[in-house]
Amino acid sequence: MKVTGQQPPRTSELTTGKAREAEGKAERMRTAAKEGAAPASNRMSLTLSRIREAIRNTPDVRADRVESVRERIRSGEYKVDAERLAQNIMTESLHEDLEKP
Image (cartoon, rainbow, N blue to C red; front, side, top):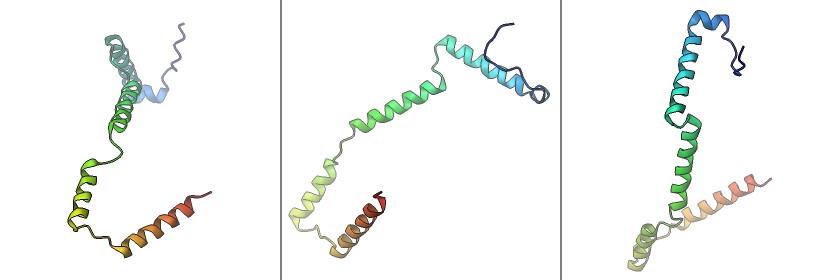
């Protein structure tokens, strides 16, 4: 008897066909491994690596937005809503206090 680390199918699996499904899945994985396809965990890792790389390549400052605000300030079109600014400062302060241990 060869030890493979796999458990024999349960009786309930034999009657419902789950054993056949499991064997089909195992066979597809073996075929994919032979053909050089990356397993799902490797594909996920590659996807996460691409996401991290995209984040690293994204600038922290949006130059287009900064330039737009500069132009509005120069032209006198940029107005600050003091009430809204004060409210946002207070809200941020409260959130920071709640996050402290």
